[in-house]
Amino acid sequence: MTSEDEQRNPGRYVLFDVDGTLVDAVDNQRRVWATWAGRHGLDAADVYRVALRTRPLETFAAVAPHLDRAECLAALHELEDEDVRTGAYAAFDGASQLLNALPPGAWALVTSNYEHRVRGRFARTGLPVPRVVVDAAAVEEGKPSPLPYLTAAERLGARPEDCLVVEDAPSGVEAGLRAGMTVWGVNSATAPAGVHRHFTSLREAAPEILTAAGVPAPGL
Image (cartoon, rainbow, N blue to C red; front, side, top):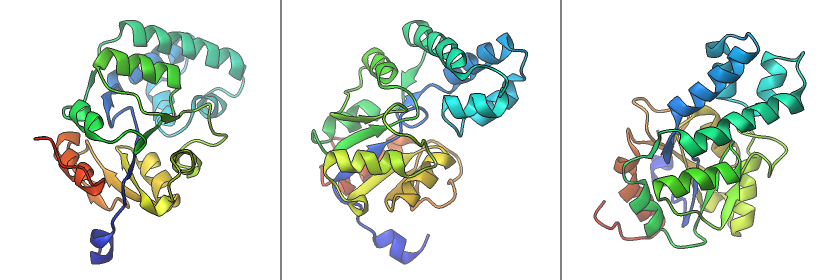
C-alpha cells in the first residue's frame, strides 16, 4: 500500500458487499450449491469454486452447459429461499451497530444475491436495509465487473471517487477497484490483492468505516 493510497479520502458513501462481509453465510452457500450439484451428478467442490466468483446463470453455463439455465435457476432459487427460512446464520460482529450508525442515504448494499433473499436474512439477523440495494437482477454484469458498484453510486447520487467499498472476496475487490473506488477488505486473514486497507474482521474495520464516512463511532 502506497502513501498515496493511505491518504485517499473515500468520502461519505459506503457500499457494502453482503455475504461474507455483513452476513456469515458461507456454510449456507456451500450447502445449497452442494445440494444443487448433487442433483445433477456434478462435483460439489468444483461447482462451488465457480459459484464464488460468478452469478448463478454464469455458473450454470460454466459447470453444466447442457442443462436448461432457467430450470437450474428455478431449482437454485427454491433451495436458497428454503435456506433463508430455515438455515442457521448470523450477522458478523459489529455489523448491526455499524449499519445503524450510518446516515440514511449514505450507504448501499451491492450483492450477487437477490434482494428478497437479502431482506429475509437481514430480518432474521436484525440488520437494517438501506434505500439502495443493487442485486443480481439489477445489472447485466456481476462482479468483478464494476457495473454493480457504479450502479449503486449512481443511485446514491455519489461520484465513484467519493465511495468506500467494503468487501471480503477478490471478485468484489476487483469490481470496486475497476469502478474507481476506495476498497477495504474485511473478514480474511490475508489482504485480497489491491485493497487500500485490510482488516481481519468487520468489527476491527467498523470504527474506521464510520470515521471515513464522517460519523462518530458509537463505542464499537
